[in-house]
Image 1 (cartoon, rainbow, N blue to C red):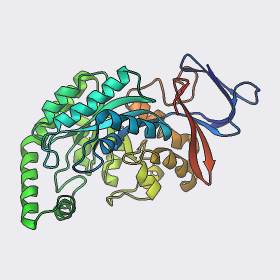
Image 2 (image 1 turned 90 degrees about the vertical axis):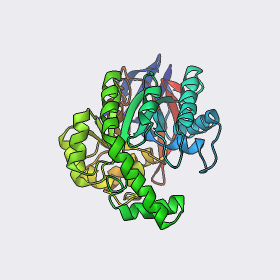
Image 3 (image 1 turned 45 degrees about the horizontal axis):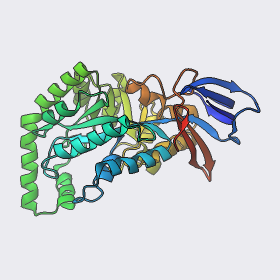
Image 4 (image 1 turned 60 degrees about the horizontal axis):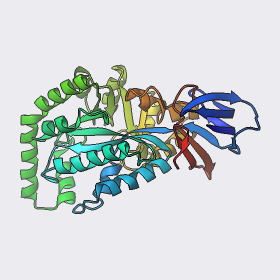
Length: 376
């Protein structure tokens, strides 16, 4: 049993001052007013544990340098500690599948990461709950093979279909892509031209059949499906036809508006909010919030950005309350992923909870509980 008092408790629609009791891993009672029972929060915020749907952070621990691959279990533990310390109690670890020039044989690396997550879950080694998000690179020749290897398992709950071919979506300018390639990979202009030509040929051959096959299998397996970097109305229509639930990182207002009108949950990066702009020059997440066209924030490449962005939005947007901002990192992502048992402080929900204090305007995580048990 866990009991807390003198807390500013952020509910789904408002903030109250009161107390909370948890029993058997669930929230048993939430009450207004003062009490003498339980841990004194000294006026700190008590919020639902954050739910992260798209983070590359585990892969960054596994591959800290371009030519260095770390022990996968050690990488997972380092990732788990940082994620928990950022107030995240449920995380969907992105595992990229589909080989490319950068990693010509991706499957062994994906196998190591997936197996580490499954083993650590089974052995109860982790502070928070980890699921797998398969990031499917459609133009890759072996992405279907990889998908079939990892999709049919309880730990896999989300898949996203991606296409990073130059000339579209995130890379609308082929010349800009060539500059990106040269910076990342080196090489001559002729080698860059050849690389782009090869990518275009792969897309023409593989993208459409792979997209349809993965969408079909995701529906059969009950996986939540996300699109990625939609830039046009056609991209959104394609996703709706495939059964997509989540539109990740739309790059234009046109695509975001179409996804919103289609009832898709729109996900944008929390670093975009913290920085005030996209790192790649795409649409501002804060502008989408102002327009009422954003539902979910993802930490993407900075775990703490999730909590930071949720506390920044009410400061930047008049009339946009903390409860609504925090829903973008708790209840909204939980529902989009089909996890209706968490993401909200309410009786009967999981006691995934975070104690937060604002210091100098920055939210500081002071404690984290998963199903009523303190984990950080």
